View (cartoon, rainbow, N blue to C red):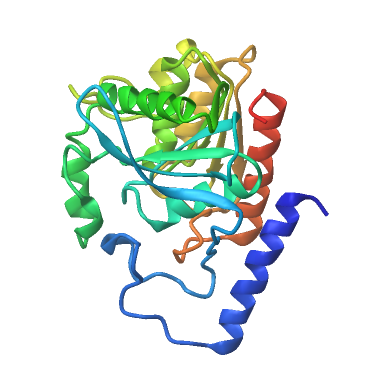
Length: 290
């Protein structure tokens, strides 16, 4: 049994224990964005900090310091470095837990709070009210903040810029494709159900389909064929734009909805989530992020 299987097995045992106790879910689970409530306690994965350094930090960035959550093996030096890009809900507990999962496997994982200058969306109660705020976040700002987070992690000695990866979910899935077109030092990316087409605006002047020819690092795209917000036709449009010579790959899970990895939501699908996690780790290893 490898480290990933042990990690996933421990999470499944914890989930089974919660199912057996049949405890009612609290009205709101601390640490999760209000718009993401109610959290599904019976499927929720909660990763502890045993053996880790894990904390919030202030990251120097071009537009001023931004908060970020980071996790790495305790006392680790020069670990493979993975930027974790948030969902539309911002930097909340699920994204922090993903950082801890990666740290348990030997990575230094950093998740910057990428809406920080525009506002704290974690206290907003509906996704419809979050969308206008997210629309004001410039892609250029996000790229600069991700660069800053990577350089900060390297400056602490915990992360190794020579083994830089990125993974993102939902809103962060789109950002993952963009970052692969932006950062020449990136070794690999994994985009979980990120939008690939859309209207162009001053803040979002291009989408992955338009940037396909500029992608510098191989990206693995993980999508669900039943995603109501990302039609599979648009995913295939990106596949065509990448072309047969591209080092990037796209995997579409049959009948899977949006956010199938989000264990705190009703959309969670354990089998696809575990398979996607394994594919992500294999992708990072095959492309020098290990």
